[in-house]
Length: 367
Ligand SMILES: Cc1ncc(COP(=O)(O)O)c(C=O)c1O
Image 1 (cartoon, rainbow, N blue to C red):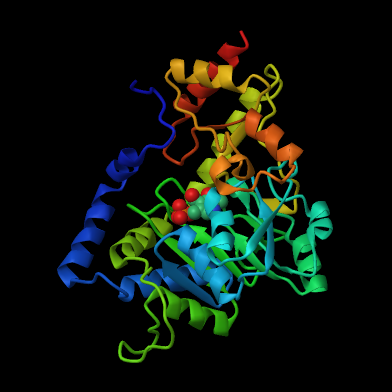
Image 2 (cartoon, rainbow, N blue to C red; image 1 turned 120 degrees about the vertical axis):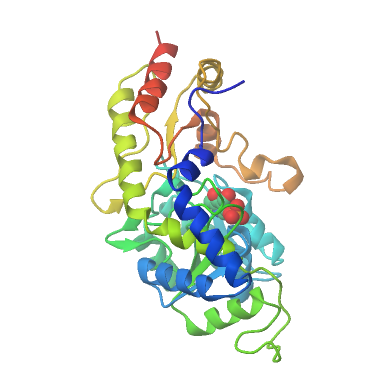
């Protein structure tokens, strides 16, 4: 069916910025600048400065950014790495692809890792923690880094959904050994295809990851420093992202405005629990606006039937995916939340009228 309000609307952003997009295409194509060129370097520098890290390394996807981080930190067979199940499967996949064992802990009502459960999950084999800053809301990085330093654990921040989000005035991806972003089209900053980035303050890790992304090459195409992969951020994607980055802070403000509209329009409606509100330690960027309801499946049917496109992330948590062999974890908060959550349309180009239509449709469900 044709939705009245789309969950994401890429063509609308293209129409609004058509001249800029077309200018980028012209610049890259007429220069023949496709792989590892100036536009990529320029974008990497800007992200590093914005996040507050010494290095930002553009790669193919957020998935690869996680895997290359895990590999560079030496996670491998016999090691345990702690993360959550209420995440995109790639977080857990990065651990498994290195040959290490994922140890999954439960989350809190803000959808992020429950820091109070980390210590009980630590064993003599634990090597690292991968906190996920879900929906554009930072984890309690003070608590996580304190435990990591006490037990000598490495930390990869999965900030795929949290470019721009802050905890105590510091941006996500600047706390851990590495922090990663995804530029999947629907993300805070989306490419016209796939893209990802690793941020780090560690010069040695940065060099390893630069080598891994380009078949072992860093300063010279003739010197191979190690076996690697081919997972670079394409120059055309970097140029598009660089152009879009100029609008980024304004887009965050617009997301926060829409979130306030949803907060006001939906609080006290039926059994809805509105998106968690952050206290002053956090600056949220609303990658997603997620509500909870005990009647989630009927609500979703009603919204879709009313022309509102919504998404459930995720109806089946990673440990309940039968093929993955992680069914031995018992995560009651994760499991309850996976039955209750639904994400509403949330993007800077969403109009006030459209946000009102979403609110009216949710209210309509409860009569
Ligand atoms: C929390 C989280 N981690 C990792 C990823 C993987 O990113 P990508 O799709 O760019 O590989 C995503 C994006 O889908 C994500 O939401």
